Image (spheres, rainbow, N blue to C red):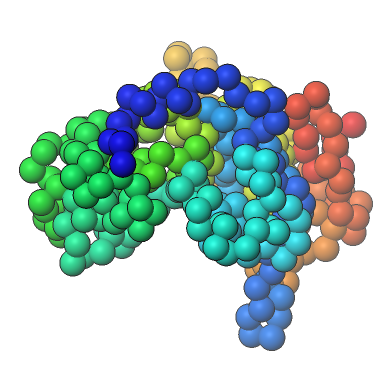
Length: 334
Protein backbone atom coordinates (compact mmCIF):
# COMPACT_ATOMS: atom_id res chain seq x y z
CA UNK A 1 0.00 0.00 0.00
CA UNK A 2 1.28 3.54 -0.73
CA UNK A 3 2.66 5.68 2.08
CA UNK A 4 0.25 8.43 3.11
CA UNK A 5 1.88 11.80 3.71
CA UNK A 6 0.52 15.00 5.19
CA UNK A 7 1.65 16.89 2.09
CA UNK A 8 -0.42 14.61 -0.15
CA UNK A 9 -3.44 15.13 2.08
CA UNK A 10 -3.03 18.89 1.92
CA UNK A 11 -2.86 18.81 -1.89
CA UNK A 12 -6.00 16.67 -2.09
CA UNK A 13 -7.92 18.98 0.23
CA UNK A 14 -7.16 22.04 -1.88
CA UNK A 15 -9.02 20.63 -4.88
CA UNK A 16 -12.26 22.44 -5.86
CA UNK A 17 -15.05 21.76 -3.39
CA UNK A 18 -18.68 20.86 -4.18
CA UNK A 19 -21.36 23.53 -3.73
CA UNK A 20 -23.22 21.59 -1.03
CA UNK A 21 -22.06 22.12 2.56
CA UNK A 22 -19.86 19.46 4.08
CA UNK A 23 -22.29 19.09 6.99
CA UNK A 24 -26.02 19.80 7.19
CA UNK A 25 -27.87 19.32 10.47
CA UNK A 26 -31.66 19.63 10.36
CA UNK A 27 -33.89 19.83 13.43
CA UNK A 28 -32.00 17.26 15.52
CA UNK A 29 -33.20 16.52 19.05
CA UNK A 30 -32.08 14.30 21.89
CA UNK A 31 -34.03 13.34 25.01
CA UNK A 32 -32.79 11.27 27.93
CA UNK A 33 -34.95 9.61 30.56
CA UNK A 34 -33.83 10.06 34.15
CA UNK A 35 -35.70 9.63 37.42
CA UNK A 36 -38.84 8.90 35.45
CA UNK A 37 -38.72 12.26 33.67
CA UNK A 38 -37.67 13.47 30.24
CA UNK A 39 -34.50 15.53 29.97
CA UNK A 40 -34.51 17.44 26.70
CA UNK A 41 -30.77 17.80 26.09
CA UNK A 42 -30.99 19.12 22.50
CA UNK A 43 -34.08 20.52 20.80
CA UNK A 44 -34.59 21.17 17.08
CA UNK A 45 -31.06 22.36 16.29
CA UNK A 46 -30.17 23.14 12.67
CA UNK A 47 -27.03 24.47 10.99
CA UNK A 48 -24.72 23.97 8.02
CA UNK A 49 -20.93 23.87 7.93
CA UNK A 50 -18.70 24.36 4.91
CA UNK A 51 -15.37 22.61 4.40
CA UNK A 52 -12.53 24.63 5.89
CA UNK A 53 -14.83 26.63 8.17
CA UNK A 54 -15.48 26.68 11.93
CA UNK A 55 -18.80 26.69 13.73
CA UNK A 56 -18.43 27.79 17.34
CA UNK A 57 -20.97 26.43 19.81
CA UNK A 58 -21.24 28.31 23.10
CA UNK A 59 -23.40 28.29 26.20
CA UNK A 60 -23.25 27.60 29.91
CA UNK A 61 -22.60 24.13 31.32
CA UNK A 62 -25.60 21.90 30.69
CA UNK A 63 -26.70 23.74 27.55
CA UNK A 64 -26.27 20.65 25.36
CA UNK A 65 -23.05 21.59 23.57
CA UNK A 66 -21.19 18.30 24.00
CA UNK A 67 -24.34 16.25 23.40
CA UNK A 68 -24.83 18.02 20.07
CA UNK A 69 -21.22 17.41 19.06
CA UNK A 70 -21.51 13.71 19.78
CA UNK A 71 -24.80 13.50 17.89
CA UNK A 72 -23.16 14.92 14.79
CA UNK A 73 -20.63 12.06 14.91
CA UNK A 74 -23.35 9.55 15.85
CA UNK A 75 -21.56 8.73 19.06
CA UNK A 76 -25.04 9.49 20.42
CA UNK A 77 -28.11 8.66 18.38
CA UNK A 78 -30.53 11.51 17.72
CA UNK A 79 -34.24 11.02 18.43
CA UNK A 80 -35.26 12.87 15.30
CA UNK A 81 -33.89 15.11 12.59
CA UNK A 82 -31.34 14.60 9.85
CA UNK A 83 -27.54 14.79 9.76
CA UNK A 84 -26.06 14.85 6.26
CA UNK A 85 -22.27 14.61 6.04
CA UNK A 86 -20.49 14.87 2.71
CA UNK A 87 -23.73 14.03 0.92
CA UNK A 88 -24.53 10.98 3.10
CA UNK A 89 -27.45 10.90 5.54
CA UNK A 90 -25.81 9.58 8.72
CA UNK A 91 -29.14 9.02 10.44
CA UNK A 92 -30.04 6.35 7.87
CA UNK A 93 -26.60 4.76 7.63
CA UNK A 94 -26.00 1.20 8.83
CA UNK A 95 -23.25 0.75 11.41
CA UNK A 96 -20.89 -1.14 9.09
CA UNK A 97 -20.99 1.70 6.54
CA UNK A 98 -20.82 4.31 9.28
CA UNK A 99 -17.54 2.81 10.49
CA UNK A 100 -15.90 3.41 7.12
CA UNK A 101 -17.14 7.01 7.08
CA UNK A 102 -15.71 7.66 10.55
CA UNK A 103 -12.31 8.15 8.93
CA UNK A 104 -13.61 11.54 7.81
CA UNK A 105 -15.05 12.53 11.21
CA UNK A 106 -12.91 12.78 14.33
CA UNK A 107 -13.08 14.33 17.80
CA UNK A 108 -10.64 16.03 20.17
CA UNK A 109 -11.75 15.56 23.78
CA UNK A 110 -11.63 17.99 26.67
CA UNK A 111 -9.51 15.74 28.90
CA UNK A 112 -6.65 14.35 26.80
CA UNK A 113 -5.40 12.10 29.62
CA UNK A 114 -8.75 10.36 30.02
CA UNK A 115 -9.09 9.90 26.25
CA UNK A 116 -5.82 7.94 25.91
CA UNK A 117 -5.25 4.33 26.93
CA UNK A 118 -2.70 4.46 29.79
CA UNK A 119 -1.22 1.09 28.74
CA UNK A 120 -0.46 2.20 25.16
CA UNK A 121 2.50 4.26 24.04
CA UNK A 122 1.89 7.42 22.08
CA UNK A 123 2.96 5.66 18.88
CA UNK A 124 0.50 2.82 19.43
CA UNK A 125 -2.33 5.25 20.30
CA UNK A 126 -1.86 7.25 17.10
CA UNK A 127 -1.27 4.19 14.92
CA UNK A 128 -4.22 2.24 16.32
CA UNK A 129 -6.98 3.83 14.25
CA UNK A 130 -4.94 3.54 11.05
CA UNK A 131 -4.44 -0.17 11.74
CA UNK A 132 -8.16 -0.69 12.42
CA UNK A 133 -9.03 0.92 9.09
CA UNK A 134 -6.21 -0.97 7.35
CA UNK A 135 -4.48 2.18 6.16
CA UNK A 136 -0.96 1.64 4.82
CA UNK A 137 1.63 -0.86 6.00
CA UNK A 138 2.98 -1.02 9.54
CA UNK A 139 6.16 0.70 8.39
CA UNK A 140 4.30 3.50 6.59
CA UNK A 141 1.97 3.99 9.56
CA UNK A 142 4.91 4.44 11.90
CA UNK A 143 6.49 6.88 9.47
CA UNK A 144 3.23 8.81 9.54
CA UNK A 145 3.19 8.81 13.37
CA UNK A 146 6.60 10.51 13.37
CA UNK A 147 5.40 13.00 10.74
CA UNK A 148 2.24 13.79 12.71
CA UNK A 149 4.14 14.29 15.96
CA UNK A 150 6.50 16.67 14.23
CA UNK A 151 3.59 18.57 12.72
CA UNK A 152 1.92 19.13 16.11
CA UNK A 153 5.19 20.26 17.68
CA UNK A 154 6.32 17.15 19.56
CA UNK A 155 9.80 15.58 19.40
CA UNK A 156 10.57 12.17 17.92
CA UNK A 157 11.09 10.57 21.35
CA UNK A 158 7.52 11.28 22.50
CA UNK A 159 6.24 8.33 20.46
CA UNK A 160 7.79 5.92 22.99
CA UNK A 161 6.25 7.65 26.04
CA UNK A 162 3.15 6.63 27.99
CA UNK A 163 0.39 9.18 28.79
CA UNK A 164 1.40 9.53 32.46
CA UNK A 165 4.86 10.70 31.37
CA UNK A 166 3.53 13.72 29.44
CA UNK A 167 2.14 17.13 30.41
CA UNK A 168 -1.41 18.22 29.66
CA UNK A 169 -0.29 20.33 26.70
CA UNK A 170 1.73 17.47 25.24
CA UNK A 171 -1.19 15.08 25.69
CA UNK A 172 -3.56 17.42 23.85
CA UNK A 173 -1.08 17.63 20.98
CA UNK A 174 -1.08 13.82 20.91
CA UNK A 175 -4.89 13.95 20.79
CA UNK A 176 -4.71 16.32 17.82
CA UNK A 177 -2.19 14.07 16.05
CA UNK A 178 -4.45 11.07 16.64
CA UNK A 179 -7.44 12.96 15.20
CA UNK A 180 -5.39 13.82 12.10
CA UNK A 181 -4.15 10.26 11.60
CA UNK A 182 -7.19 9.19 9.58
CA UNK A 183 -7.15 12.22 7.27
CA UNK A 184 -10.51 13.66 8.48
CA UNK A 185 -12.61 16.34 6.85
CA UNK A 186 -14.43 17.29 10.07
CA UNK A 187 -13.13 17.49 13.64
CA UNK A 188 -15.35 18.12 16.65
CA UNK A 189 -13.26 20.03 19.20
CA UNK A 190 -15.00 19.50 22.55
CA UNK A 191 -13.52 22.07 24.97
CA UNK A 192 -10.01 21.18 23.70
CA UNK A 193 -8.15 23.86 25.67
CA UNK A 194 -10.20 24.31 28.85
CA UNK A 195 -8.03 21.91 30.88
CA UNK A 196 -4.75 23.59 29.85
CA UNK A 197 -2.73 26.45 31.28
CA UNK A 198 -3.33 29.78 29.55
CA UNK A 199 0.11 29.88 27.87
CA UNK A 200 -0.43 26.36 26.50
CA UNK A 201 -3.96 27.25 25.37
CA UNK A 202 -2.56 29.93 23.05
CA UNK A 203 -0.16 27.45 21.45
CA UNK A 204 -2.82 24.79 20.91
CA UNK A 205 -5.32 27.32 19.51
CA UNK A 206 -2.75 28.57 17.00
CA UNK A 207 -1.90 24.98 16.07
CA UNK A 208 -5.57 24.21 15.38
CA UNK A 209 -5.85 27.30 13.22
CA UNK A 210 -2.70 26.44 11.23
CA UNK A 211 -3.85 22.84 10.68
CA UNK A 212 -7.24 24.04 9.45
CA UNK A 213 -5.63 26.23 6.81
CA UNK A 214 -3.19 23.50 5.79
CA UNK A 215 -5.70 20.65 5.43
CA UNK A 216 -8.94 22.55 4.77
CA UNK A 217 -10.47 21.07 7.94
CA UNK A 218 -13.96 21.88 9.16
CA UNK A 219 -14.26 22.37 12.93
CA UNK A 220 -17.17 22.29 15.32
CA UNK A 221 -15.55 24.16 18.20
CA UNK A 222 -17.37 23.68 21.49
CA UNK A 223 -16.31 26.03 24.27
CA UNK A 224 -17.41 28.30 27.08
CA UNK A 225 -14.43 30.57 26.34
CA UNK A 226 -15.99 33.22 24.13
CA UNK A 227 -12.70 34.96 23.38
CA UNK A 228 -11.34 31.75 21.83
CA UNK A 229 -14.59 31.17 19.93
CA UNK A 230 -14.47 34.70 18.52
CA UNK A 231 -10.88 34.16 17.34
CA UNK A 232 -11.45 30.78 15.68
CA UNK A 233 -15.04 30.78 14.42
CA UNK A 234 -16.64 31.80 11.14
CA UNK A 235 -20.14 31.33 12.60
CA UNK A 236 -21.43 30.95 16.16
CA UNK A 237 -24.48 29.20 17.59
CA UNK A 238 -25.56 30.11 21.13
CA UNK A 239 -27.28 27.29 23.03
CA UNK A 240 -29.52 27.66 26.07
CA UNK A 241 -31.14 24.56 27.58
CA UNK A 242 -30.51 22.62 24.38
CA UNK A 243 -31.95 25.20 21.98
CA UNK A 244 -30.26 27.64 19.63
CA UNK A 245 -31.33 31.09 20.83
CA UNK A 246 -29.06 32.99 18.44
CA UNK A 247 -26.91 32.14 15.44
CA UNK A 248 -24.89 34.43 13.20
CA UNK A 249 -21.53 35.00 11.52
CA UNK A 250 -18.98 35.45 14.29
CA UNK A 251 -18.09 39.06 13.55
CA UNK A 252 -21.76 40.08 13.44
CA UNK A 253 -22.73 38.21 16.59
CA UNK A 254 -19.90 39.68 18.65
CA UNK A 255 -20.53 43.21 17.36
CA UNK A 256 -24.34 43.16 17.39
CA UNK A 257 -25.67 40.48 19.77
CA UNK A 258 -29.48 40.45 19.76
CA UNK A 259 -30.74 37.87 22.24
CA UNK A 260 -30.53 39.02 25.90
CA UNK A 261 -28.74 35.79 26.82
CA UNK A 262 -26.06 36.39 24.19
CA UNK A 263 -25.60 39.96 25.38
CA UNK A 264 -25.07 38.88 28.96
CA UNK A 265 -22.67 36.14 27.89
CA UNK A 266 -20.57 38.64 25.94
CA UNK A 267 -20.66 41.20 28.76
CA UNK A 268 -19.28 38.54 31.10
CA UNK A 269 -16.00 38.38 29.14
CA UNK A 270 -13.12 40.12 30.90
CA UNK A 271 -11.68 42.61 28.39
CA UNK A 272 -8.74 44.99 28.66
CA UNK A 273 -10.02 48.41 27.50
CA UNK A 274 -8.12 50.54 24.98
CA UNK A 275 -8.67 53.61 27.15
CA UNK A 276 -10.35 54.57 30.46
CA UNK A 277 -13.34 55.85 28.47
CA UNK A 278 -13.93 52.38 27.00
CA UNK A 279 -13.87 50.62 30.36
CA UNK A 280 -16.96 48.46 30.87
CA UNK A 281 -18.45 46.93 33.98
CA UNK A 282 -18.25 43.14 34.03
CA UNK A 283 -21.75 41.65 34.23
CA UNK A 284 -22.72 38.25 35.59
CA UNK A 285 -25.80 36.29 34.54
CA UNK A 286 -28.58 36.48 37.10
CA UNK A 287 -29.88 33.35 38.77
CA UNK A 288 -29.18 29.71 38.04
CA UNK A 289 -29.67 27.67 34.89
CA UNK A 290 -33.14 26.05 35.19
CA UNK A 291 -33.29 22.28 35.41
CA UNK A 292 -33.70 20.67 31.97
CA UNK A 293 -35.98 18.18 33.72
CA UNK A 294 -38.42 21.00 34.43
CA UNK A 295 -37.74 23.85 31.98
CA UNK A 296 -39.66 27.14 32.27
CA UNK A 297 -42.69 27.78 30.09
CA UNK A 298 -42.50 30.22 27.22
CA UNK A 299 -38.97 31.46 26.66
CA UNK A 300 -36.65 29.28 28.76
CA UNK A 301 -34.47 32.30 29.55
CA UNK A 302 -37.27 34.51 30.88
CA UNK A 303 -36.69 33.85 34.63
CA UNK A 304 -33.19 35.34 34.25
CA UNK A 305 -33.95 38.03 31.67
CA UNK A 306 -34.31 41.67 32.74
CA UNK A 307 -36.32 42.40 29.56
CA UNK A 308 -38.91 39.63 30.01
CA UNK A 309 -42.55 40.49 29.33
CA UNK A 310 -45.72 38.55 30.09
CA UNK A 311 -45.56 37.04 26.60
CA UNK A 312 -42.05 35.72 27.34
CA UNK A 313 -43.43 33.76 30.30
CA UNK A 314 -46.12 31.94 28.33
CA UNK A 315 -45.32 31.95 24.59
CA UNK A 316 -42.27 30.20 23.17
CA UNK A 317 -40.50 32.63 20.80
CA UNK A 318 -39.92 31.64 17.19
CA UNK A 319 -36.59 32.13 15.48
CA UNK A 320 -36.63 35.38 13.53
CA UNK A 321 -34.24 36.89 11.03
CA UNK A 322 -32.20 39.78 12.38
CA UNK A 323 -30.34 39.99 9.06
CA UNK A 324 -29.77 37.68 6.11
CA UNK A 325 -27.58 35.23 8.05
CA UNK A 326 -28.46 36.20 11.61
CA UNK A 327 -31.33 34.64 13.58
CA UNK A 328 -32.51 35.00 17.16
CA UNK A 329 -35.32 33.37 19.14
CA UNK A 330 -36.66 36.34 21.09
CA UNK A 331 -39.97 38.23 21.23
CA UNK A 332 -38.03 41.50 21.21
CA UNK A 333 -36.73 40.90 17.69
CA UNK A 334 -38.84 42.93 15.29
